[in-house]
Amino acid sequence: MRGVVIVAAGRGTRIGEDKVWLPLGGIPVVAYCLRAFAACDPVPRIALVVIGDNLARARDLVGALGIDAVVCKGGERRQDSVRNGLDALGDVDLAAIHDGARPLVDPALIERCFAAADLHGAAVPGVPVRDTVKRVSADGWVRETVDRSELWTVQTPQTFRLELLRRAYAALDGEVTDDAAAVERLGQPVKMVAGDPRNLKLTTREDLAVARVLLGLPAFEGNS
Image 1 (tube, rainbow, N blue to C red):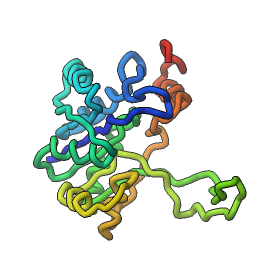
Image 2 (cartoon, rainbow, N blue to C red):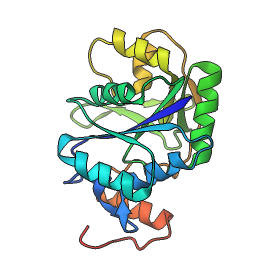
Image 3 (spheres, rainbow, N blue to C red):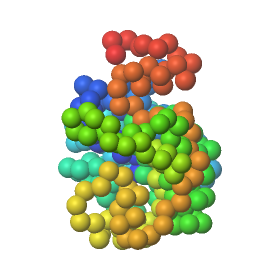
Image 4 (cartoon, helix red, strand yellow):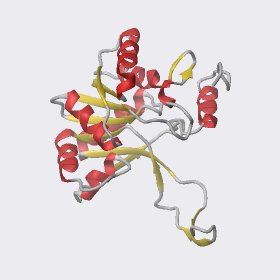
């Protein structure tokens, strides 16, 4: 049995509002994530994690889309929200964690991640860094040029055997920026799989405009 936690419990401070609820082609950003996982075969169990103010809104969206998903409340930190989502999933073998602000994920990428996690225990999608990377001091001076040959930017869904992810979070001391980092702290290997450059995370309004173009929509929509 496979499951997915869609994390949509952020506050969207950089974009000025809760970005997962911004309109994208007439439906909220997070609806695209729900549709992508619902299009997988077999369909995984889905847990949508949102802030408390959006619980009713999220249940209405799930119902309108006709998707079988449980909606639950997020926690103080991202990792707390993930834990809540995992608890809502119940007993699954593989668990994928996906950012609700990545609407362009597609079922093919999801399947690659599930397959790699089933084989290796932990898998994350990513793309190699293409630009020259420099380490810079706090006051803006270049310290060195970093070898990019082993550098990748990481995406979601990050996918794991559930028992491994639960063990990683149980042992976690402090905060991590992604789920793979918790597993890495156990000393467990994480397999990198080919991601998708289209699978961008919406952080700014410019990102939202790019997503619209990639979907063949007008670059701007309504008042956003």
